[in-house]
Amino acid sequence: MARASMKDLVGKAAPLAGPAATTAAAPTEAKPAPAVRAAGADEARINFAIDRELRRRFKEWAAHNDTTIKDELTRHIEELLG
Image (cartoon, rainbow, N blue to C red):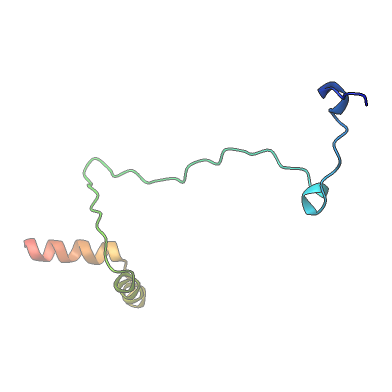
């Protein structure tokens, strides 16, 4: 029995069965990171977790009242501080 070398086997592999055999793998391209708006010189970020359902209800309320969560929280903080 003759021995096959890697040189003999290259390009002679049996094709794969199924969808992977019919579609060539697309080259992977690095996706750019999502744009994140940086806070301005006079802005600071506040970040905290709340219950998902509470956030959903608040967002729904804000949309119904033609405002945003950010605007309402900012207004409330300003109201508290006078």
